[in-house]
Image 1 (spheres, rainbow, N blue to C red):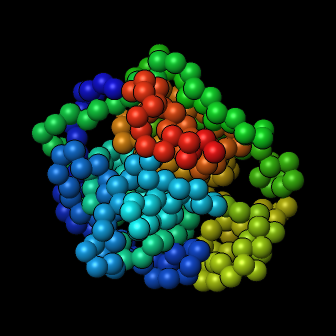
Image 2 (image 1 turned 90 degrees about the vertical axis):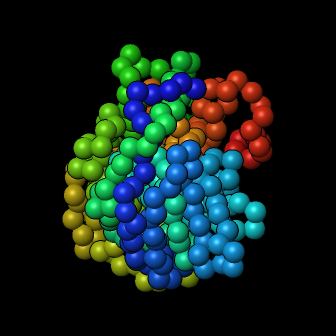
Length: 296
């Protein structure tokens, strides 16, 4: 762990975003509030008595299909990755995220609504430096043909690479996407990239009673000809969205990361394992809670 040359930041004003949860179909309001130095990102359940807090840290993550879920004590929040991604992409370190449901709003499947709201709130520097983890030794995690790795780089930057490979869906196919993260790149090139599923996956979810208020216009649903009743924002939008997700999942380290992260057909599960492994390497210890929770 090292100190960066930049100061910690928070937002200047409160700002809200409202929408519908993809999974449960419930209306939800997210209220972003400024936070003090060293707070990090903390979710607050305003719909529960006592307004319990759920810190956005990797040892509070539990496995959940297709999304990132955090549990602290008896309370949880889920689908948090797009909010966390927006905060990291805009370099907002300390923020209280008040929510009145378990599930965050899906919006259009990207982080652009959160990004625009946070931009409108303004960003202010605080009086303590931001801490970072500089990758010095490669880390690689593999599982059934998928992998994610973290590597040192010569430049002092956070570089993200992702390989998409959908041999059974020609409209997606193979994509190779790479970005060095800064606020401008995030806002313009990454934040608008939407989540995606295959048509048969969407139908299976609906058969399970999920996504009842979600239409083909609310995210990218692919058949072999491309997105159904929708158009791409970018030719490699799927790869960009996977990078958006990686940024959000790795935010759970609580630190800036200096190095390159490369995902190959990976998802939230491997991303979270990598976040934990990065912390494990940086602090060279086994003292973080529930070490087996992320490798099981």
